[in-house]
Length: 53
Length: 260
Image (cartoon, rainbow over all chains, first blue to last red; front, top):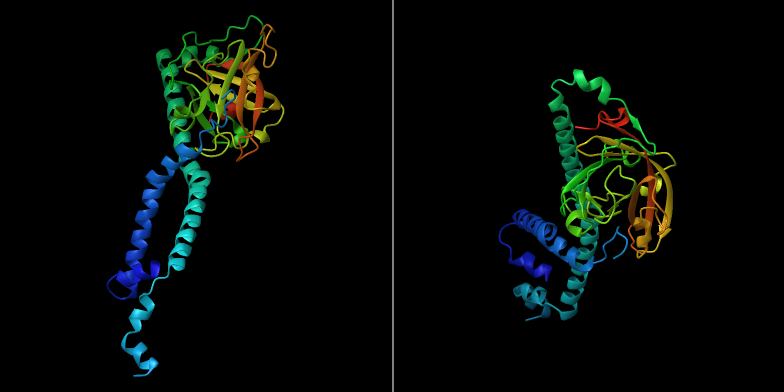
């Protein structure tokens, strides 16, 4: 899967590496900014820290 | 044509074959990395970011209240001498207490706990929902049913121990007599840490005017802090009680450099 992605990328190895790093940064940004906060709201329903809930 | 020749002619065909099991393996590895990333985000990255934001928001509000209380006196020298005096706590002590009930999310106080860090401060907002506890401009929530800062009875607040600023992560470091400073727009309330209790999450009696003594008549001015126990888990609650020691219009010496 990832090998196929690597082959699909154009250019010499260092261009591919650059593209992969940019893609990784973009994926991490989306995860940290939107996906993880959304998941956290779903999995952490316990009102941790308060009593009586 | 030998087998070796065939590989030389079409080496890519052989490498392009994607096995089902290979893809499944890569997906599983990806899922594992995602879970680790999520835990890292939750407990390190997000907590670190929000700690900074919550600290900054509290510093801003503390400075604003300090400036507002200083400005009407015009220079401060005329009233400075009198207002700097501390009001100690007695049965008839003249300690200002906010009378009106605040709206949900309204900032009611700024807390300073040197034991949690010399620069540690948090805005206390009304309500203990996640809209307050997870907020970048709060972190500590005031139980709406409980007393206001300085009042006879129980001023009770809650915060996360881990995640979303990890506000009360170091609660178990409190030692007998440790000062907890609560600033409102009226001034500074100095509480002294008294004791811990470890309770079940449904133990709402810790919020009573006299904690866990429902029928008792309140005479002390108590600060109660609740958080999860143990750290990183939510099975129990760690409760810290502190008692009001004094009130002053101006910042107590111990936090004078931290306020504003």
